[in-house]
Picture 1 (cartoon, rainbow, N blue to C red):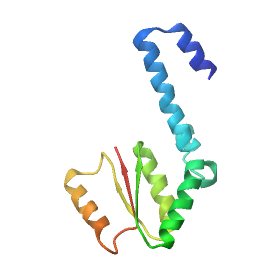
Picture 2 (picture 1 turned 120 degrees about the horizontal axis):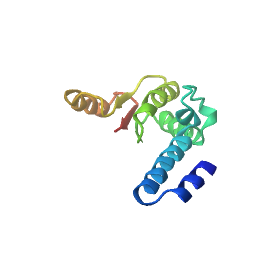
Picture 3 (picture 1 turned 30 degrees about the horizontal axis):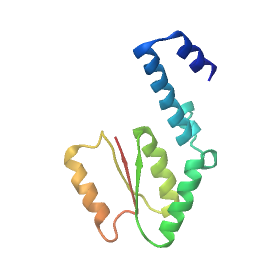
Picture 4 (picture 1 turned 45 degrees about the vertical axis):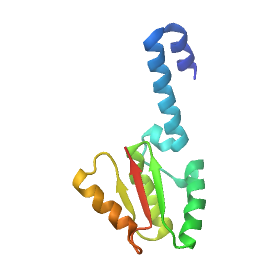
Length: 125
């Protein structure tokens, strides 16, 4: 926070806005999971309030044998989230992000919509 305050005081205009936006992005990462910001790859579920709440929701959905769509702004979160949700649902789900080939996207959507298809679908930019 001290770095942010110092940079805001010393910069003007577009540079100042750029610094503020960069810090907002960091804060979003920290809110997702500290491992995203730290880059340590740990992603321990107990270290994130969002993961804890997602567990509660996913367990309730799994108990009703329903499906869930999960959206994340950050493509790098799809791997940790997919592993986390697979543990809860007991089977793999689907992931679609900006790197997914366009030709594969429709088949992923159709697979998710099948009655006994995958239990979750993660979507990201």
